[in-house]
Length: 239
Image 1: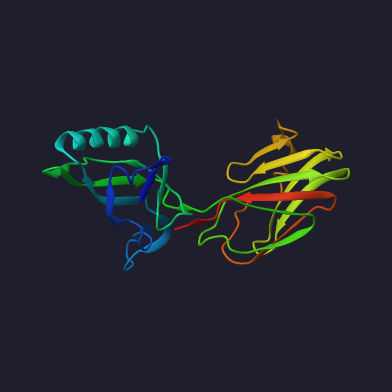
Image 2 (image 1 turned 135 degrees about the vertical axis):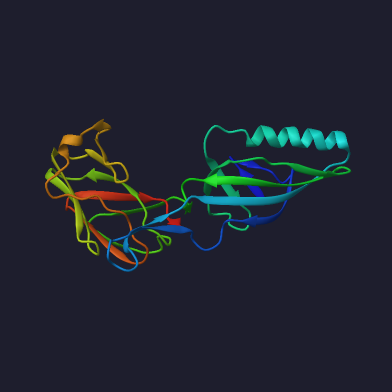
């Protein structure tokens, strides 16, 4: 079964095969050096994910087949990438958009075709997770790839700065501010956005020593400033 942009397509099509969910796909960036055999490895890059979904469309008549095609077209007509969920991975979400020509081979009142979805983001995402703590937390089960996070801290007593430290990466983010009790700090690690009491506060970021980090697969320890209650929010992701 396929759910596309929140719409269950089982009443329109019967999925027979899905490709594009196998081992990761990546390219390597290399540089040739004159006078040296081979090349110099620079970095690797994950490529976009292409999902190929083969299906049958079973109708009661040719007229019913035409109606189902029209309904399917209405669902697939999106201007941007949307959530894609398969029934054998109910807690995983891909984000893609229809690509290319989806010809339908018709035999009587049965149609056979393939839908191709391009996911420029190659990852699949799990259900959002949250954990609250006061001083430190040990966290595991974060998927198979590093994951961006969002942080919401409630100040429980006046402090001059807030610091969150990732032990395994030896990285921290420090926010300098005259925090008062019940102030709310929100930090978006994926884009560096900082809010204090719902107001943008980019000048509070300690640019000199801070470094944004992602959550890692496996076990890790995160500590925060005393006098605060912190909630970490993230969606684990897999390649």
